[in-house]
Length: 211
Image 1 (cartoon, one colour):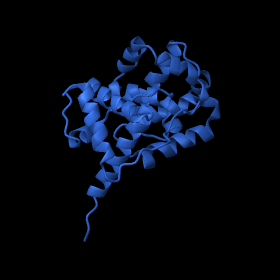
Image 2 (cartoon, helix red, strand yellow; image 1 turned 90 degrees about the horizontal axis):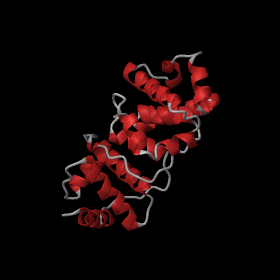
Image 3 (tube, one colour; image 1 turned 180 degrees about the vertical axis):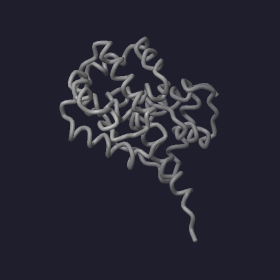
């Protein structure tokens, strides 16, 4: 099957899938670059509801001065990134620092600047040079700043497999999901999150044992 056929098959699968719901709200568009970078860096392989969203909300409330890069860097000269993120794992602390340093070097100041910067494929490649940031996290940054796309992770790949299709690359999976969203007339980022939510709940329920 080509991309068009796979997208049509995915639409048909979703429309007949019991319990699948299109979400109408997603996280992001914080207008707070410290919260945006924190969200993207912390979310990989974490339970979003319990580990990520509370930290992002805390940052937005406690550190309003970190809404732009200059304010964030001034704050980080006074407190540690560990304290800012409320996170002890040094791999993500370093990743956060690397992203902030990159944006500062690139002249990015506000979240709106960041969104414009993310429009460039060359800039996306600069982001992906940072250890631990691949295509999925780069696309997730774009979703957080208002782009309409998908960020393909293990949940979305498994969903495609359940729907009866194989994809050979990240790019193919993204094209199929985005085109399916277009065919249904819904925002791509909302469709992405709808699949993620459905699969997260399904996984959680499958891990429950009934005695």
